[in-house]
View 1 (cartoon, rainbow, N blue to C red):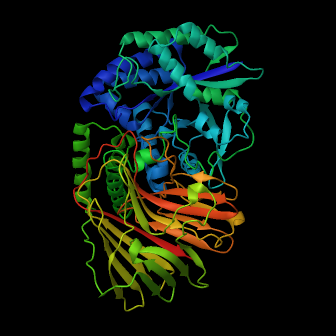
View 2: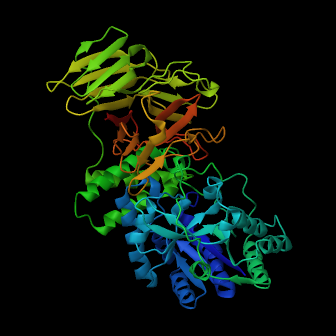
Length: 637
């Protein structure tokens, strides 16, 4: 028996849909969807509470009709949250608020609490499991293809059965797999790229000797009978005939032998899950995302018009709300402001309105950053190398290389752990370069690199507590970079405070820190990295792993994967030592890119902090004019 299910994703906050087009979408896309459910249900309908509220403003009868279809077993509401938010990029408390407010709105509008959730943009991390379980969900819908691609040990037959995902807190949740090829087949049928016979033959090929579960569709409803206008390559809009072809497809499916169409939760209940809970994420691919490789965590973190700045503003607002007994109205507004669609192909008019709304909330809560970068103090340094010593930190800096750290060690044993690795250290041609710690690199397509690896005008000041502050200014082709490093005396810690006084921020990648482990300082067999991607800490063993999060996907997409650092930290540790990197997310929520491999028996491991990446959503437009500031710290033990 082949058990089929389908769900349609509804999103009136879609980046390319103007607010004035919303009622058109409801009439041309969402009304026919209910017709489909009535004639050929059950089907799943997934929407944020915000979208349901927006639909009700256009057509109050639509919600009443949906409620009736749910009661009749023709439709199932699939949960999302109050707004479509990328879980692995926001603090755990924010995810909990989004799910809680979503459930409250679902209950108010439809009188139900959904069992199954579609992870927003299918951006999954092990830390999300606890959030959905705590919110009362039984199962998640996730993309099979990208997860399975990083688990070659999995037999292909697993795609046809529910699974169980093990979360970072040890609990597990049921998984229903969606399928990229299947949803694209239905889209091609609707757009008249393939015939109905071809489509039905494709679905019939999914039969096997055992009972199987297969997802026919798990994508946008807004692309049938309407075009958002995001891409120049979009199919021409063929209006209502696209829905007619979908109706014909579902009618044809009902006539196939040994085929049964179910709701998503019905499919979950009818098939035995793969018994053993497994981790879906890996060290090389810690945050699986839907569809093509261009869809990765950087898309909503450090690209768009000015994702880094608006995410920092949302983080500051979050910090303010957690310190007070804030009303749900403030939390709902923050959910809306942290939604993914403002971070991709947002139209100019919606971007302008968004910036006004975000600025207004910042002004009301007093979260707008105002502290200036301190001026240079202390004696001017003249030597190339600076040796720094406090009771807790020892380091050597290279003024010729923008104050890059040649080596740094920390109390109590002062074993050098991080620093520079000279050219020729590795036999691997890909690693035959100089590697630094503490430097900054900006790369734009077709342009020379811009780095801070030049002479730094430097001043050194000594604190009363024994700390040492180094203030450097480095001239670059795009403008000066101010770098302040404070070597603490009461903690094994180096604080970085960077300011980029660049008038223009174009398309490219900007990576900071480049924390490079010294070869031989760590035991690779016990080396791990730990961080948070929207939940509790996730640990990844690195022994034998090739990790290249920062490798480009194409000329257009500058990174493959990323780490959210949602609680502001990441640790690299073996059985003897730990290097912890802490990010001030309220200044700029930098994300992590790890590069790790063995080369000729030597360990290469480097963490980069990304402030900017390149992809198809990048369209530079500042949230707020002025210099850009980034703050992070390196802690050793």
